[in-house]
Length: 170
Image (cartoon, rainbow, N blue to C red):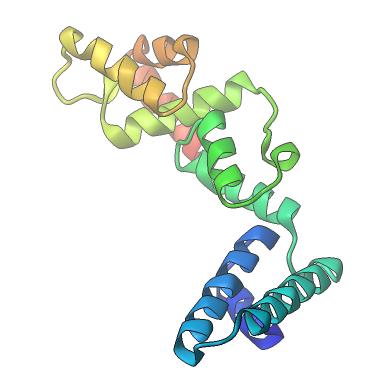
């Protein structure tokens, strides 16, 4: 069990919950192939929990480091604070680690990256005022607040390009 966990961790960064899921799927495959008894499955699941706890105890699996690294990567990809928190919770990060501080400048930077990548708002090839509601809806579905969404959509193309370059450098 420990060997399987270390092999997974050598290739992927994960949380304690994520590693338990991976080991659980491995146990399920083994149980189906071996037609294992429920007692054997329970013993393997307990062993998996023990291995994950031991690896977390020595710092090999670190939920806080995973959350920080993943949050940075998602922010650089233009994800909103809400979307990042939802992603982290889905990955098994505890809610207190997944909660990000409210930083309007970081949120504006993420929104600029988002609209730049999606080519909406000031980055649209042919400006179309009729698209504003659709662009606002896209930003809302991406988790951005109305104030941030309106702010980025009201930018001129030149200002948006400047902010996009700054956001990419950061």
